[in-house]
Image (cartoon, rainbow, N blue to C red; front, side, top):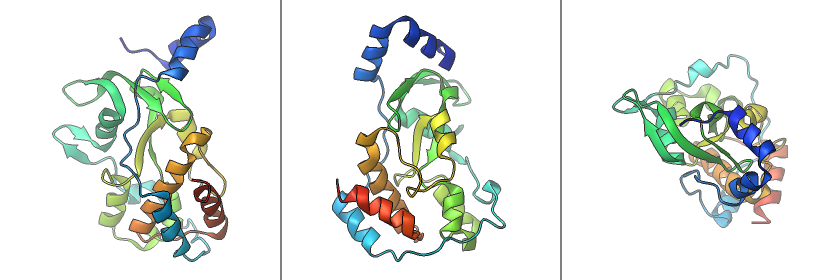
Length: 212
């Protein structure tokens, strides 16, 4: 049975013990591809010159085609939902009809796919400002649907929407235990795609990575 966000919140208010169990033993863990080590991320970051961001002029999410078909009827979003969820059941069109998803950004667990967004860890608008403005459509599509690097992650929808297109100069996951992983992943994606970092972003990343 699929439980909505409203149902989860109501249960939390009604039964404190159930909420405690939910927090202590999440039923699913996101399976982000393991990012490079903190030492490697520090090395990558040190080699990235701080560069002023390009303007958003001309930007559109449509310039980064997603979600594309990955296998059979499953697109990128559906593939990540299956990868990051626990006990995920899908219908004939690959839509998730049940399962649970643990969001490492805020520590919440959800039981309806509609409560979960697939976060582009390096947001598409941020990628545009960092160099993707000059890319081919095929390279933008690769970034927007990259399952081999730590770029796509199932997280609480409201958290993803709150993050928007912010970089680590202004946004980090509220769950501090995940910030090292987030920083390592961010730097790897930017390094692998040849994207730039601005001064505030670089300083924030260095501060977190130095504590990992």
